Amino acid sequence: VQLVESGGGLVQAGGSLRLSCAASGSIFRINTMTWYRQAPGNQRELVAGITSGGSTHYGDSVKGRFTISRDNREKKVYLQMSSLKTEDTAVYSCSAGVQSSYFGPVIDYWGQGTQVTVSS
Image (cartoon, rainbow, N blue to C red):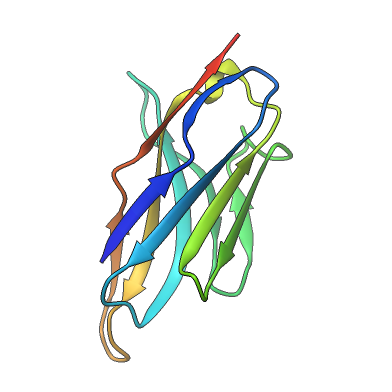
């Protein structure tokens, strides 16, 4: 199973970006999909998560500015980021809990991350 993020880049404060994460490989079902971020010198931070049924939760620092969504058929998760701040600068990674067969365990997989840089 592979997760590949895209959509990162450089944006001015107040701007928007949309990140995507695509899952591929031996996938029977994807459970919760989650975006994390990590800035240099900081601990990894949960940004947003979404269950297979569409329930969402957000980190306090992004509530009201970021929106997570997913396309189960395409096996993708998205992160729409608006009103970006310089403190949102980080490497953003997606994670997914994946079952490769009906009776198989749920295994967490991670993407390689995509850099988001917000300039003042």
